[in-house]
Length: 594
Image (cartoon, rainbow, N blue to C red; front, side, top):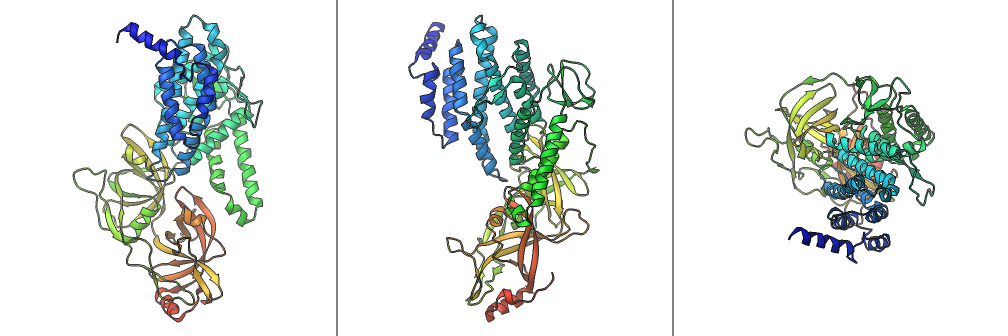
């Protein structure tokens, strides 16, 4: 096809009656045809439309920009829907990464489209026809760059220098054309008077990237990002050409990075200053208010507030990140080490590994990053229905044969309560912050249980993983729910008539630990969510059967919960078998301090 034919095809495309972006009145009907209950499918359609009707069209006209802006506003739910689904389903080793890929493609398509429009604006002699759309276009472009930043933080990635140059260039264009602080109406049903500006959106990007600490889960990052946007709007935060405090942050509009502390030593460049005093005070106030509200509630009500403790801790992290003066270094001393460790990921897999302690060592030669699985059996443990009228012991519902998947990571450093690893990036992305892991170092036979607290991708192929060690002495246990009846305690059954049995990890009290001075259970999150305080739990180990009550949750993550417990009574396993044979009830057993 020659150049003349190509120009004719472009002209036909612009005049195509099926072109949903040719005029404003075509956008609404096209959007109404999208599957709103399926953001992923809608994203595919939007990406296709942008590629056909913007990215492949020359020349671009202001009317097409106006239609694209309307399309953007009417389909905001697609990006937010994909992100919400990802956060809700982010579990260790899950397949939810596909949702991030789909969201990233949609964000990238809008970003590329607005970048083309901006280039056309700069090159067009009809600048006056484009000028009414400039501030809104820059606002939307910055919002998509912010969304890209958030998705990369969820994958523990950093922006490359070229991305920062793009962000700074957008703000410089706004300054040059006098629209950096121009109010852009962003009315919603909740707030018809809502507005924003290019400076607000630019500042929002800067603040969001300050969360690049590698120690936030997807849920925490999404929650913090929403709070930061709210504070930027409520406090009317802004950048200044002159410093207003000895501390705070600076940004170089000619540079390739975001906010830096003023004490970083940078003295030259196109510098702007940010005083975070109002933001620091707002974060501190929110933390104090949340702590006060929780303190006034009864303990039973306090425990029902989902992740309240997590949010208080997160506000503490935000306070440190945005304090006017940089906080001191709290990191404990670390020692560089060498060697390999076997790592098992996720609540269920950790329980399997700890229970059976298979004999294995890291492979010698070959691919040492992908260790083989090992097969274990749960057939050696029986559960007992200790209640009147029971007929026979009930065998475990867990399948007899299971495979534990493990990975081999390189040791990087160690401290008194943590281990640092170097891991393949592809594996590390399956291990979100907050994941439970079991670790065996070198030829040691003992498992160490830890929680992933920090993750940072340092290249295309490698990442650093920081793990907090929470237990070196623990026991895999089996739990069973019971319902009180006139005839004694009877197993609580699910709708499928199967007893509600599940496995957990028991961590004895450790007087040497400031974080674990009481007995602790780590349970599957879904099992804890369905726990009824009115129904006692029976905890089965190799030697004893305990009757227990769960107390306050200490930490909640995607697939597990750490909770303190109260042991009401216990009896040896052989005594439990005898009591079962005699029809005794566990509620009649004398209390015994464990």
